[in-house]
Length: 329
Image (tube, rainbow, N blue to C red; front, side, top):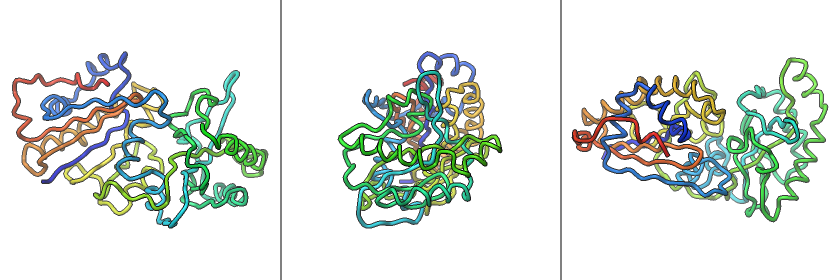
């Protein structure tokens, strides 16, 4: 059966904003897809989860994020426990530290290479993916519960530091790298250009190198021009065809991540309107003309996700009102 799964991070706004945003969103195709369904399941993540729901869904689908992202970069170590590593900027906000939005870091390859080469001797193994994504091996850190940067961003960093038996070892390593990079010429030059210094690193997404892929279909990731898609996410689409509404298999639409992570719901509304024209209307047309037999939508928020499945037969449920009420967690 020709089927499509569309993953939409941050498609579900906060409950207190959802009614007003839904009233202002002109998306009849999305309303049809959400209302005329054959399956609707709501999932809530655990209160102590340190990654976002769409990241958790992707980790399950790919058999562990670090391993899958490494494969996307053409790296295939046969053993070890690996984490995704990002060079980041940590800033002081009043009386606590905050992890800044890495999408605004604007770290080029030349500067990143210098920082990478400086840091590499302090790790058991440190592998290069690209300027914003590296990988570290830490075989004894399997029990470390590490938060994703988007989950931790903007909050008191003390609440999001890695937790577990090796937390102190991580903190020691992080302090060493912070001292190594502090006032380095790369950062001095960045500040002269009006850019934030790269003063720390963040790690998350731990997985065994040999972790098998749970999802055998290639996963496409759309790359909207208006939104900066993190390279770790783009790497998950390695080997897949270009993301398009008529394609079969899973596809991730990351258009809403910057707005949802940054709580910019005015911009979110505009991005959803664009998705209505570029994705939701073509997806509805594909169901109606039979080129897609079944569509599953994974809509996420910070608290969980909703799985909605529909088909050409389900679209005939005319007694169901066409609305956007399912845009709530």
